[in-house]
Length: 352
Image 1 (cartoon, rainbow, N blue to C red):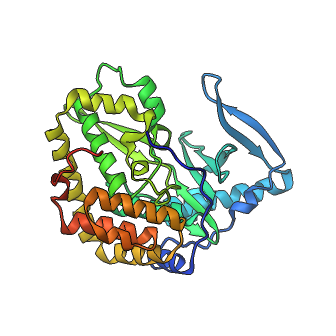
Image 2: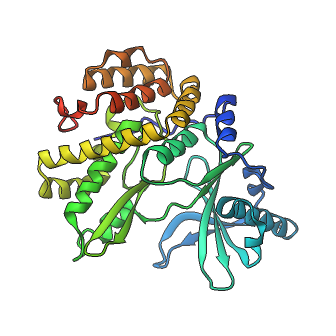
């Protein structure tokens, strides 16, 4: 079973990371900061349609501030969705602002409604954390999922990632008549591999969503990370393998029931090949990202050394022992995918 040591402390954005974000269009001159949203003067609990407490709270602002804040939030949405074209704001309104009071960074979730058709969307405003930003970028570059976000000063603005929360999917959908167990098992194996290769930790069922898409004869699944705070932070290898979180056991059992070790190995091979291709296609950008990441202190020296030792034992690759930062460990892990594509067959059929 994988255990997180404790909540990590957010890491400030370094000059190197800020230069990277500017180079690749992730910096926006926005009209509002995260700290502006903390000026609320009242909150009420937010309940779901069944009357259950969501652990989010809807926040309210003084009348004199509300109009200004809502206008600024609509501008953020225009930057996020329409490259700053403010014409999209004409029929939009801020319907609700929620704060996650139990989360470490107290993120805000904004619900935007189109008054013409009552269609709605969400986006998030957060206190920027360098670890999370590296996680978002690695997801954007190395996974099949595109990530839309930008940074303003020390504020992070993120698009909502669509899908059924993993814990809700396990609770309500695993016994569905149309569940395609083989395809779901395949996707979990590939998701497991993606997280391990790029060292994204803490992927239990509350930290990912399942995107369900009807295909022309079958149903396909895509598992998407939604929490990137534990990017390259912990010192234990198993933290980066979703298969070791007990919350994911029902998905793992489906894999054990419907897949042979040889089939799982083939899916791992496929995912590593896809990651290797993405690395080659975005080589310059990934090199720039890893150059910044390698210079940042994202974790403690003890955790870096511990993870280096465990990955050395796992891969039989002594270079992990000389890595001084988490960024260097990620770089070496990705290099192995490109330079030694068959490494997973060399005694690594199952994660142990």
